[in-house]
Amino acid sequence: QTKSTEAKGIFNWQPTMADIRPEPYVVVFRASDHFFTDDKSVMLKVNTGIGLEELEMSSGVNVYPNPANDIVYLNINEAEKQNIQIEVYAINGQQILKRNKLTSQEGTNLYIIETRDWQPGAYVLKVTGDKGLSSNQMLMVE
Image (cartoon, rainbow, N blue to C red; front, side, top):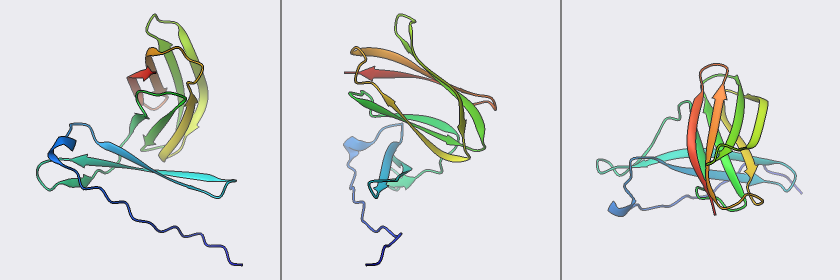
């Protein structure tokens, strides 16, 4: 029995005019052997010029799915290694989550936050880094 380290597949999507929006779509490809898991994210922007274009990922934070039910994925793309802190606040200002002393590497970094025990509503997700990363996003939990 031979083991392959190569995965092949086809991603097929034909966007329509209804799919046009200012923010890009994030497509996550997950490979797993039931022991290790590897996620790769690709940002796709739908526009009226050439249809579908792949964006070069720059430093930034993407949260999905939003609204969330049980878990939310936090995709942080970094231009360089830096120490980050993740905080979540309820709309009333109460801190729900704080993870500090996290080290993000250059490239794509994926963090998973469990939300299954949270009350439905709006939350503020704050991500800060010691080399300039700063993001505040609204997160909805159903």
